[in-house]
Image (cartoon, rainbow over all chains, first blue to last red; front, side):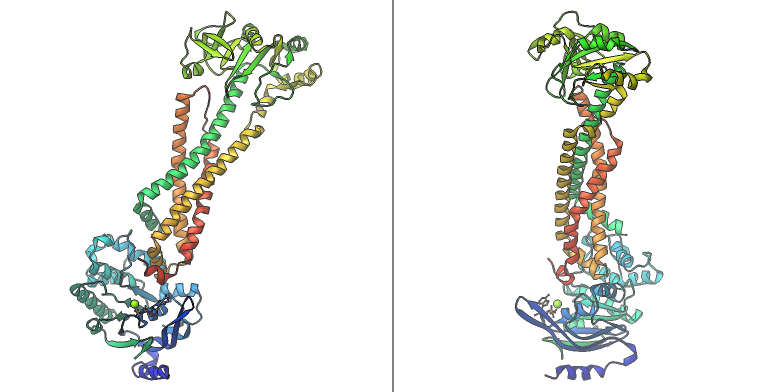
Length: 239
Length: 365
Ligand SMILES: Nc1ncnc2c1ncn2[C@@H]1O[C@H](COP(=O)(O)OP(=O)(O)O)[C@@H](O)[C@H]1O
Ligand SMILES: [Mg+2]
């Protein structure tokens, strides 16, 4: 199979060297479940330019989440190179991956994943605290909250917020430390169409206004249409 | 910010938090109460002995602090020997018969005792007149609901309460010397001899001089004897305190272990979130340990308050049996024990939290 090479050619057409934010080459990931080997990724090549909003579309089990977990430093790759904002993820220690999550990557999950005991505001502030930053919101970030439409929900606990509101808080949390990339794994997977549209609109808006580089996983073509580029993944390979 | 999360975590599960704090509080109370009673009982014994006004005490050979003095091995001829020594102005002997711990009954020569100490100050009644007459102190009277004319059966005899004295002097239960000697079958023999000198500063010297004529009987200046009244000199009590501390610590450890273990299981996803946003293993561990520390500190404070409760209870229900002191020094020791036990209890759950895989934690239902 020469898919890896073909993928690389395919991607080099859309990427420009200097402003590359994410560069993935020949990425594989093998999970060992007992004696069984699961090849979740089989040689992924991907370039994402600074400021891009890329949708990654693929069927369930195609390896989308695995790719995100590797890009986000949650799981080490099995082989291949991954460079994010100039940082090579290959051979990173646990500690270095923790540092990467702190400074370089922001996450948005399908299930919001807010801390249930803290208010929306404190959910964001604790990420600022962990990132070693001041926990006072800058005027710039206040504008982002306005853009997200959650300014008046800040004192509420997650369970007092709708799914759409929780996801917008999660987006605010994901970008509060100004990460190089924001990774969103099916951010609208738990939302009805109206809330989905609102959240997707907000993500697109964020990308356009702040130039935030965003990668979004989805299996919904409708959602993917908000992105500036769509990448398809099937059986652990970009197609 | 972290403190906010820790407080939020603790208030999120109020019952678990409350139970953990309570368990640690009980641990602390157990330790403080035992130590308080040990100190209190020793000190009150000490104070009563001191209040007699003697400068020297003679005790039978082989006896030790808090040992049950149930025999009267010294002949009362010793009294004469003691009286003959220079500087001795008064000497009086007593017979002490142990009852169920910690009570004992003391037979004494009331006239000689009055000369040495000024005698009992009576709330009601007075010195015994007849052989079956008995004087008890107010605490004992209150605990056993005794008043003048009450009958009480102790050893094998029926006694008649003839006086209720202010506490804190010599003993709680006193009868005439000869009467007790007859009851316990040791006429002419004594358990203890109290000696008063014309110059108290000579106590050590005279005590040494008395050793020869009294053979191997134990002669102590009252100060030397008081120094011997400490917990570390009472082997059994010391061991008992250690056993209780060990049990209390283990209980605290187990409770914190379980509380923190369930907390970690329950917060699998939350711990995953903290890690996903860049929280290090150290941070995750520090959150759990600080939470545990807070539980231990709260538990210690509640434990100290509860200890005042046990003190009150003892004072009002068994004033004559158990005296509980507040031993401030042990607040620190008990607190340290509680904190160390709790921290140890948090280690395994903490390790579990640190080792949890983030992606698994985030897909955890
Ligand atoms: N932690 C894991 N252990 C073992 N197999 C896994 C693990 N995570 C994912 N897989 C497997 O890897 C493949 C890709 O999964 P995933 O990346 O979650 O796909 P997607 O997000 O596109 O649905 C699937 O076959 C899945 O069962
Ligand atoms: Mg997935």
